[in-house]
Length: 111
Length: 114
Image (cartoon, rainbow over all chains, first blue to last red):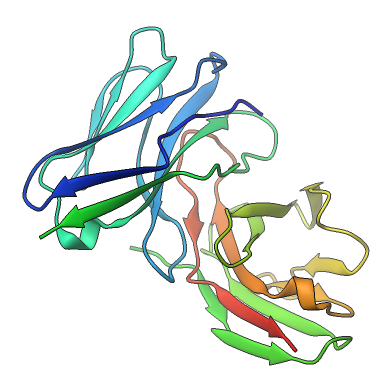
């Protein structure tokens, strides 16, 4: 299973954009980049995913490097409710499609 | 949006007892998963289930664990003889048979073994 590397923690001020980086230098051509987050005492929650092109949805944007060896999750305006652990996970298009969670980035949002 | 539901939300059991954790996955999903998260640690994969059989399991998923989908809707995780170290949050998830769709996770069952 291809691995990802994320900073352990980050801080952001409320209402400001947040850029959460992820390195995945061993990504294969068939791996999708998925982002999930886990709010305190809750199950993992889907945020966004992509393959090669940048993606936007109502929660966030995903910027994928041209060589696909890194990606960045962008929260356009952080709110206190965005405080969570954010996981960057590679998901293959074959096998059992399981997620392998790393330690993620704990995002702290300051009021 | 569809939801994966898990019951109970909290289960307390005595060491050595059997527990069954229940999950109702999303109805048209094909893959089902169990994960666990020990307090303060990362989410760990236990097992995946497809076409009424285990498709993959981790080293954690030993003979004390079993899964089944008895009635086509519920998906259960059984721990035969619980140990103190089985205390954790257990998450059920379900998804389609592809890597380019998202999986949905339940809110978890907190298992406390005393």
